[in-house]
Length: 240
Ligand SMILES: *[C@@H]1O[C@H](CO)[C@@H](O)[C@H](O)[C@H]1NC(C)=O
Ligand SMILES: *[C@@H]1O[C@H](CO)[C@@H](O)[C@H](O)[C@H]1NC(C)=O
Ligand SMILES: *[C@@H]1O[C@H](CO)[C@@H](O)[C@H](O)[C@H]1NC(C)=O
Ligand SMILES: *[C@@H]1O[C@H](CO)[C@@H](O)[C@H](O)[C@H]1NC(C)=O
Image (cartoon, rainbow, N blue to C red; front, side, top):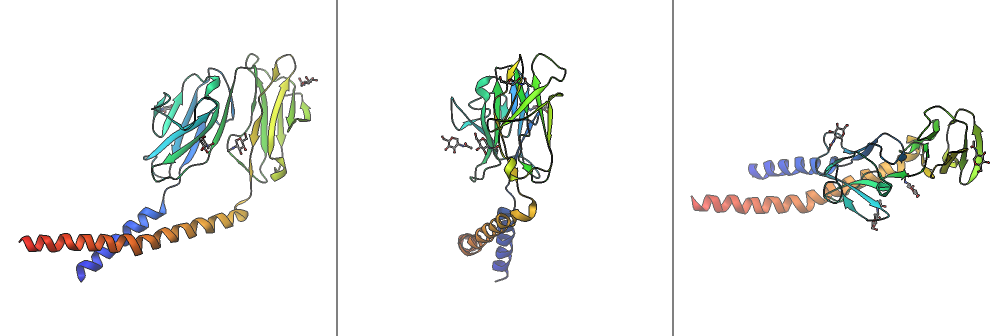
C-alpha cells in the first residue's frame, strides 16, 4: 500500500514535469527580415533552460520542411549559422519538437538587389514604436527613401529612416522602400500583436490544454505505470 502511494507520487511528479515546459522561441541575428546576398545569418531555437530536442526547419520556394544540419549546412538541430546568405535561403523558418510542438515562425528574404528594408522580424506589440530603415548595399551613408505600405506611398524621409509611433493592428501589412537610382527593396510583412490583456483567451486555452494532459496522465498513464510496475515487483518477489 505504502509502495503504491510512492508510485502515485512519482507519477504525479513526472506528470507535472511532462506537462509544464515545452515552448521554444526562434531567434535570429541580425534581427531583421531582409538581408543582402552574402551576409551572415544566425538562427537559434531557445527554450527557458536549454534547446535540446528542438529541430530548426525551413520552407523555401525550392524545398519544404528541410532540416538544419541534415538538408542544409551550418550547424545541427537547434542552431544554424548561414555564413554567406543566398537568394534561396529566403523562406519561413521555425523550430519543431519531437512531441509535435512548434515555435513562432520567422520570414526571411534574401535579395540580390541593392536595397533592403530593415523592419522588425518579430511581431511588434501594440502601442510600441517601429523604426524602419532603407539601406543600400553600396552606400553606407543615409539617403532619402520612400516608404510604402501595401503598395501606397506613406511618405519620403530625407534620412532614409521612418518611425511609426504607437502601432496598432491597422499598421499590419506589407512594407517596402525605395531609393532613387539604387532601386527598391522586397516587401516584408510586419505583424502587430495585441497587448498582454487581450491575449488572455489564449492563455486560458493553454492552461486548459495543460489540465487535459495532466488528467490524461493521472487517469491513463499512472494506473498503467503502477500496474506494470506492480507486476514487476511481484515477479521479483516470486523469484526470491
Ligand atoms: C511548410 O511546408 C509544408 C509542406 O508544404 C506545410 O505543410 C507547412 O505548413 C509549411 N510550414 C510553414 C510554417 O509555412
Ligand atoms: C553561430 O554563430 C554564433 C555567433 O557568431 C556562435 O556563437 C555559435 O557557436 C555558432 N553556432 C554554430 C552552430 O556554428
Ligand atoms: C510571413 O509572411 C506571410 C505573408 O507572406 C504572413 O502572412 C505571415 O504572417 C508572416 N509571418 C510572420 C511571422 O511574420
Ligand atoms: C521611389 O520610386 C518612385 C517611382 O519609381 C520615384 O518617383 C521616387 O522618386 C522614388 N523615391 C525615392 C525617395 O527615391
